[in-house]
Length: 232
Image (cartoon, rainbow, N blue to C red; front, side, top):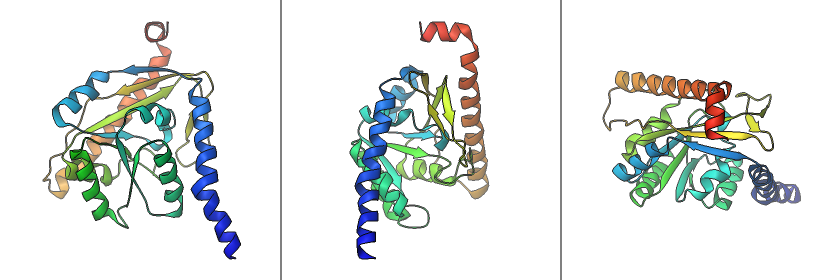
């Protein structure tokens, strides 16, 4: 039993993260990226010094290696066994894993995130992960933005050609040599003090905005003028 546990821990801490990251890097080298509305990101950083990148779980794959160059970034990751594997990948990318979730270690993790934003770290957050429901913005996104005192910046990714997996969120991986748009939507500020009703109304509004951004960006591939302009 002990040998089995050692082997399992080795796989989760070393083999799986390294193999997965190698695959991501190999695929990403074939992609053609176009960044759109970067001024939204820069203006937010100039005004607040940090931000919270927000993305659907379904679409985060294209941004893994792209955002590895946007250091320093910190990401809150659960203290589960699966979280351990993700934390290893995050560490290999040069990001800062912050271990904690709403059910375990959340208060300590939020305090660490607030400290890191004051040091210039940006925060990455998957709004509906790790198990959904798909497209539903969970309250954790707003809590992080409130506690850190920085805006949310939705990051919208869309690939012209992709594989879609049979998972809870229909996870998407761009096919090799696909053209990819990474769009920085306008920032959203969450006031530090909100009553429960206003908090929920804002959560729903953010969810609606992010969904509309994804739908609009996906539709750009049907616009020949857009494709010719950004991918000559």
